[in-house]
Image (cartoon, rainbow, N blue to C red; front, side, top):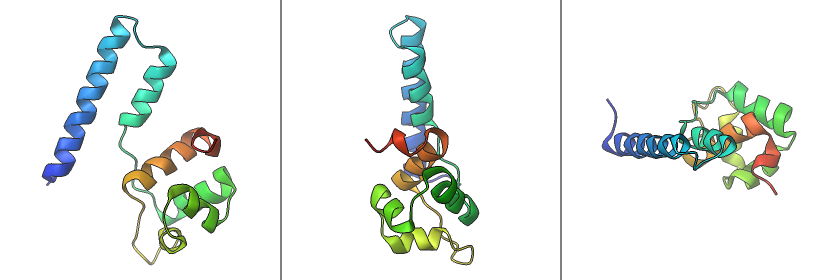
Length: 111
């Protein structure tokens, strides 16, 4: 059963997408901005330990400490995410940033 907080978040994201599509219909938003809006409004997947490691090593090509710094989490958190036995997964902003890194590369969030 969805919590009140997650239901509210989904409602807000749905309304944002609806507004973006209305703006697109009036040609007030570009294709690129619409693609960004879709990515922002999309819920991040639940990341397995293997997927977190693959993103860090294969896509971002950074150490655990560097990824932790980029995501503003502890090194211990990244270590737990990469350990299958921990049962821990990134969530919230960290999961969203991992999603962006996975889809667009590290350059998408680090200037």
